[in-house]
Image (cartoon, rainbow, N blue to C red; front, side):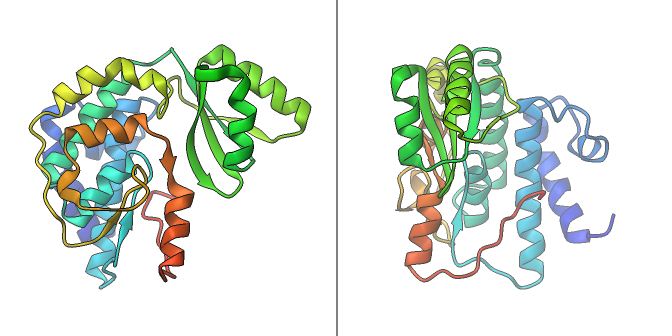
Amino acid sequence: DQSAEFARGIAECEVALAPYVEWSLGEVLRSGSGLGRVDVVQPVLFAVMVSLAGVWRSFGVVPDAVVGHSQGEIAAAVVAGGLSLVDGARVVALRSRALAGLAGSGGMVSLACSAVEAGRYVGPWGGRLSVAAVNGPSSVVVAGEVEALDELLASCAERGVRTRRVDVDYASHCAQVERIEDELCSALEGVTAKSGDVPLFSTVTGGWLDTSLMDGGYWYANLRSPVGFEPAVRALLDEGFGAFVEVSPH
C-alpha cells in the first residue's frame, strides 16, 4: 500500500510462483494464512526478500555482493542476476514442497555456543544429529531425529547451554535430506543459471561462486549441506566489506 516498488516486485513474484502454488501471494501476505506451512512460508519469504532488494535498488543502494542463508540464497541468486525470477520461483516452490515430505521425521534446535562446541555436543549421537547452520560466533543450529534432539536438549540443560527449539517438524541440512534427493533433483532439472552481475559468496562452498553453477544439483547441495553463514560474513569482513543490510521481513 505504501511502496509502489515493493508492490510491483510482489506482483511479479506472484506471477512467477503461480504455476507451482495453489495460494495467492498477496492474500497470504495480507492475512498471514498458511505461514505455518514450509511450502507457503519459504516462497513468501523469497518474494519479500527479492521485492525488498528492489526497493533498496530504487533508492540507489546497489549491492557490491550478496550472501544468502539456506533458502535465502535462492533470493540472493536472483538479486545477483544468476537466476531469472521465474527459475528462482521454481526452485523455492519445488524445494519447499519436497521439504514438506520430510514433515514429522525430524527437527531443529538452536544452541547458544560456538560451532566447535556444538560439534562436540552432538558427537555422542553420531549421524543422528548434525550441525546444520553456523549463524554467528555463538549461534548454531543442530538438526536431526526428534528423539536425539530431545536427549540433546536434556544434555545441554545439564551443561547450562541455552537452547531453543526451532518451530519446524523437519530437519534441513543433515542426512535426512538425502531421502528427497531424487525427487528434488528431478523437479529442478532444467533450471538454467548464468553468470550474474553482482558477486555472490556461497554459504555452501564457503567462497565466491560463479552463479552459472547454481543449477538443480547445487540447490540440492544447498539443502543438504550445513549453512556456513558466520564464516561467509567473516570472510567478507576480512575482504573489506563494512556495511551489511539484512534484506528480510525483520
